[in-house]
Length: 279
Length: 264
Image (cartoon, rainbow over all chains, first blue to last red; front, side):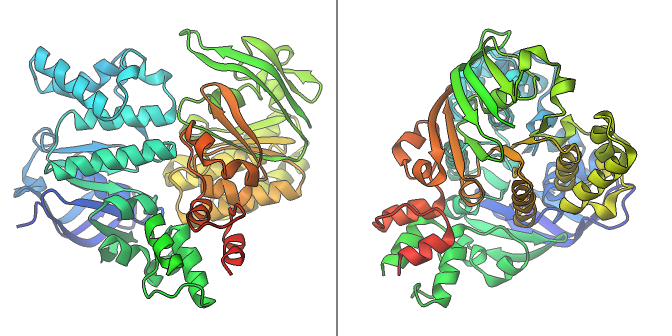
């Protein structure tokens, strides 16, 4: 039995006419790191909300089909039960930061306070989480005094500290510099190695190919393709459907037409491109 | 219109010194990308151009106007600023009202306002969304509304703060088209971005900031090959530049066509 199981999920927000998710089914194994890609409007954020229980418990609307995490059905749970298992870092950190705390340290402790973790353990966990994501030096700053990328790290840390079984990340690196991006992918990979299940919406395909186990390509609320990162990210179907692709892939595809790329498979990462162009 | 920045320092009320002596000249019609790690001072720097922030010491001039002597409302006629997060700038009931707000407030005649709004909506492909409430649009389209509302002000200088974040390939292409069109019109375009490939493909000049100072400033080709120095401010060279280097190409390549020529 898959750890995450979506069966024929169709969902429509209140006041909208068209469903955002359309008969969507997918399975994710425990400890798997899955990356979700897709054009704007494909339903990526809505999928995140559905996994995190906000759809439908918070947003309401009409839902059909079943969402299960660790054998429990979303339809039979309340949001406060659900969030103990599933953590979501929002696309826009500004929407996630509580506004109730004066320092980054307190902000990260907020979730633990709410589930009644003892003070000493809470301090220890917050310090560990901040050191993991490299924000220890921001501990005493106000969350609102930070740059966009720094806020994103705080938002991510405040979810990681809860140690959810399923970690859902909606474009967690969109405002980060490249080294910050690589570090976040590294941290997330490590979490997956330790048994956390990860669903990460991202546009940065080079890093997806380097770190994720599997890629799910969404389009118009449905799964267009899924499989190993290289397989999905180099497919012609993706390039034709308005998905972002790596410059290595697009350049090698052009090189192949001119006889300058000899291999069958196209590259997504620097390593693959170097090997391919050398041969 | 020229931007001159002379030994600019800025300290936030919290005591954080975000800019530590920056001197730059940006010439009329230049296309400049500003890169650098999170917290390097990129947004703090550009917010001095329209007077949202005023120097702690040093000076910023837009044309002959020194920013300390003019209000942000005044400076808005010379410098348009598109926020990183569109939700910080949108407030109108429908897209048309939103996009018309800026040019109306600059006191243009109605016919000119109409013309500017029409052009901005066409450029950002919003023409079929005029009556929609901006908050009923997806974040992608809200970003385009934010872009349109600034473009419609027809300022000689336009600043984009991370225009491509969270945008898919199609929309990044749209934004590149907008920038190319503004260039043709002779506007100065200043863009903050972490998307170094986007930067390589759309900008001639690159300024890398690190810890409140200018680390590198020059043509895209000169800057983007300097891997070790760029690493100091957490910037990677573009994908094709890195690939070219690994393959031992003699020249620095930044764009697909250059790369394909170089490997022949």
